[in-house]
Image (cartoon, rainbow, N blue to C red; front, top):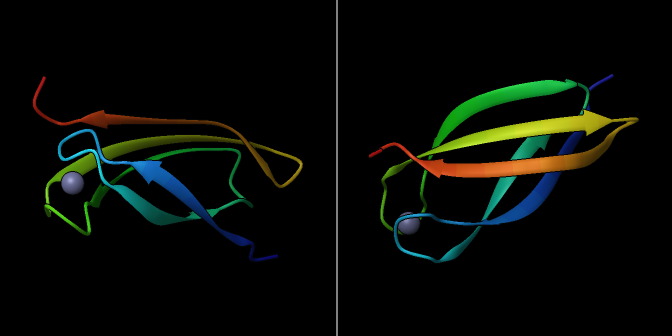
Length: 63
Ligand SMILES: [Zn+2]
């Protein structure tokens, strides 16, 4: 099964709300996504349970 869910996050660099697409068939994942507004790399950590996103953390790559 292939389950994609669009979720809003806030960019840790510019503070803009952007939408990311999460594959909810994967229980734990982390990846880098470039901000659609300022183009900086955002580190994203996602936990999924029963196809629902239960935890979503975003971090800047600077620190
Ligand atoms: Zn940004």
